[in-house]
Amino acid sequence: MQNKIYKFDTKVQYLKYKVLREVARQAWNGTLLENLMDIPKIIVPGKEPTMRCCVYKERAILGERVKIAMGGDKSNPNVIEVIETACDECPMGGYEVTNACRGCLAHRCEDACKRGAISFDHNQKAHIDKSKCVECGMCAKVCPYTAIMNFKRPCVNACKVKAISMNEDKAAKIDNNKCISCGACVYQCPFGAITDKSFIINVIDMLQKSENNSKYKVYALIAPAIGSQFSYAKLGQVIKGIKELGFYTVVEAALGADMVAFAESKELAENGDYLTSSCCPAFVDYINKNFPDIVPHVSHNLSPMATIAKYIKSTDPDCKIVFMGPCTAKKMEFQKESVRPYVDSVITFEELQALFDSRDIDIRTLGEEVLDNASYYGRIFARCGGLADAVQEGLKEQGLDFKVKAVSCDGIEECRTALLKKNKGVLDANFIEGMACVGGCIGGAGCLTHGEKNKAEVDKYGREAYEKTITEAISLVGKL
Image 1 (cartoon, helix red, strand yellow):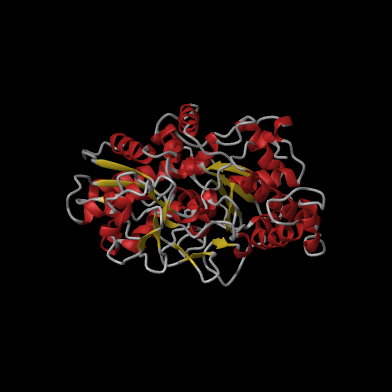
Image 2: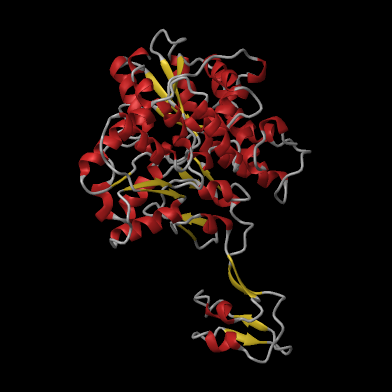
């Protein structure tokens, strides 16, 4: 039974969390390799009902989940992986004739099909020959009863960059040349057959080797989306809990957002043409893979995560920095040559919760610590439109006379539309804010919870910032 305290959106998330929690617990205790084979039995005891045909298959799949929680397939550069043994419950999908078919006389579906894939039974009900069908959808368009429906697998439907297909065993297959690691498929898969690799063991190893921050300091860099998460406790308790795990201190990535807003607004004013944002790694990856002509227009600034991490490393070169946020694509970003010197690992909010519980830390019982590094504008980077607002504010505070015509793209489909229009010269905008996840970072696959209320929570979190302007926040950078 799911522990309702954590308010995970789905039982799939909860199962993933339980695996992460147990792997982390064993790693803390130094017994991970010793007890590796027993972890599935711990998570799913023999008498507990499972989602599969039997407890043995469930445990076999859990074994694969454990491997991914330990870092996954090292030969696969993508952080998004498919557990093929878990990917066996979804129909292949495609166009199907439903019970709404009335066996009409018109047979428009037959006339529309150029492949001869439509036939009729003795009741004149239509049927589709899958060996002939090319999924063009013409039959569905002309059916007066809308009796022909296109049924897609959840992962295929979730992936807006068309990176998912099916292999010969009918399991999902990810094309790494198209995938932007946004994690939309991870969140939408009803069986958890697609998931993101975890670096939770690396983080535990860093903390243990730091010897309570005496050998080197371990900084936690928290994403501004934190304002919408861990709703069962107070934010100050979350910060206290992170320090209880062994982190030296907690710094807001939103302070890096303030720094980026200042730099990006200046770059925009000096550019003379147009810019796209560089904050969302999935959006930047999407441009690199699909719009090479726009690549020169991507802002040359590092993301907020990398920007503030670079500053911290300049003041404390031996430290380790772990980013905590809602984003699976950040797990790809920190491995890039341009970012790797500054960020040592990335975990999601799901994994942070698993870390708390692996150490039996109930953050509700803790005191509070203040988190105050960033401005209102840095904090609202977490939701769509926040970056554009911050760039506008950055221009104002720097006294730059430049009129911003911003387009804020909410989700990768809106990003695609804006980029296509800009490529064709029909988009009247000089700044494109791209957010791969719907809603922005608050819609990231690594969130504990997803929902419309998260935007209001982020705005509230922004208003609580002591520093109301970007200038005020940046002036405090040297005091970190």
